[in-house]
Amino acid sequence: MRTAAALAFGLVFALSATSAEAASKRPWVLLVVTSEARPLSRRLAQEVEALGLTVRIATSEAAADERFGGEPASAVIHLEASDSDGVELSIAERNHGRAVSWHVPSAPDGELGGDELLATRTVELLRARLLELAHESEDAPQASPAPRPPLAAPPLPRRARPELSAWIGPAALYSAKFRPGASLQSALVWLPWPRWGLSAHVLSPLAPLHLGSAQGSVGAYATSYRLGVVVEALEPLAPVAVRVAAGLELESLRFEGRSRPPYQDRAQSFGLWGPWVSLAPHFRITESIRVLAELSLAWPGPATTVRIAEREAAEWGAPLGSATLGLQLSVPP
Image 1 (cartoon, rainbow, N blue to C red):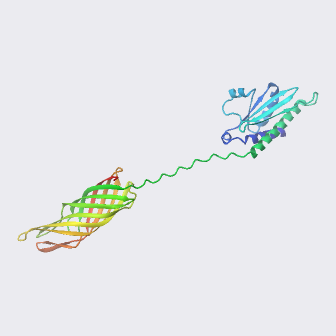
Image 2 (cartoon, rainbow, N blue to C red):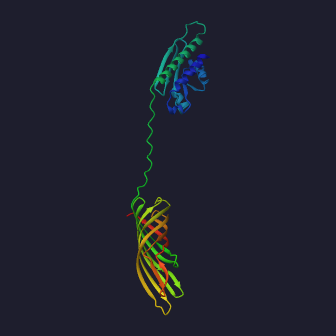
Image 3 (cartoon, rainbow, N blue to C red):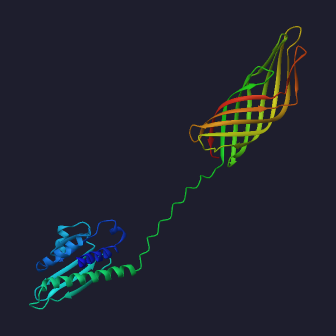
């Protein structure tokens, strides 16, 4: 029994040198035997199977391929026995292409236990050869693992390209001393650098800001021209972005007064200027179309006194606010 266990141990050692792909599947051993060697082959097979290995017996390798098919055997043992010549034994390890063979002579005629002695010698010799193969497999240089393909480089961020956009929309005007009015605002925005650019705006009056009293009323028609610097506070290509702008405003202001008799109606024009700032969140509809909502504040000056029926009614020059809802179209230049 010790001999059989050692033989099975040697087989395990030899089979451990298989390739990584073969190791992921259960190895098996093929015994190719002649009819005279069948008793001995069964003994070898029983001892190897005791350790969980699969042993299959066939009369030839061709017959084994037809009978078993599928994954080829990890090792093939040829066993030929005759009463006169003894046993011819060979083992071929398919994974490394190595093979060894030897001859075990028969016991002398009349020797007690001759068949058992022949079987024992065969088992011992097979065990020794398997251990040699296992030792050679350990000493052999291991094949270096296949180099891993380089990891794909992360996609580069899309380079910001110059962008020209135009938008237009109605604007509500507010002043602390006047009733609200309305304008139409149109603008051009040019972004030659990432998140930075220039903008130009025009606000044309639709309905004047209004100031009234018992003696009459005044309508303020303001046409504003704005030039400023634009900064995209958030990613411009995101679904929601925020644009901040600041600059200089030139304003053409016309007052039209209506007075009750005996006072006469009057109209007067002024030229004003001052700083302005705006905050404009915009929402992407498509890659080139956005909806924009702008809040702005301007400080036109110098201060101008507004009179109704020769009396001071208010002063123009306080901060003027506007709220615009517009549609923006963007195209590359």
